[in-house]
Amino acid sequence: MHHEDEHAFSNSGRLSASLQEHIRKSVPTLVERRLVSEDITEKVKGAIFDAEYSIDAVKAASTSLDIFKGINEKLKHSVHAAQRIKYAQTRNPSMYEGARKSPG
Image (cartoon, rainbow, N blue to C red; front, side, top):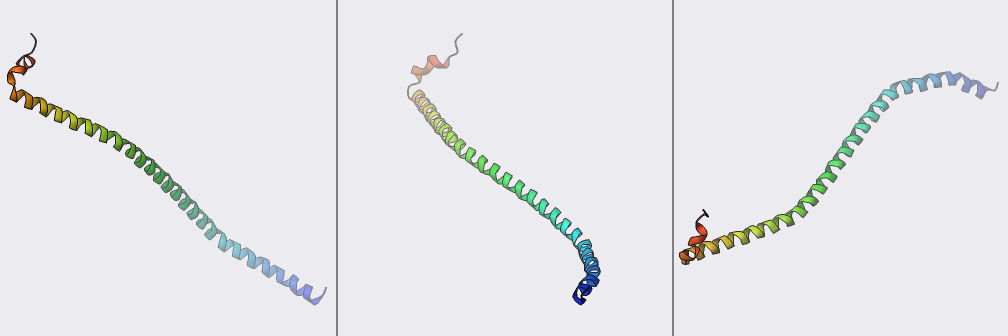
């Protein structure tokens, strides 16, 4: 054996032990980091789902807003029509006398 080969061979045992020690110390930390990473990933996925659901709810509410505006307009017209009828009844009560009496 050459001197360099003997030196490398004698160091290989120490290198192996050192590598094993490094792995023994590093693996638990790496496993913990992976678990934390997976937990964060799941939380991010949940947040994305919630955000998308909220966006869909806002879009649906926007569509509903147009419907409610239409209902509001119809209610305004109905109230106005009722006020006109009431005003007409006060101006000419005899014309509406028969309408107030229940059939019987």
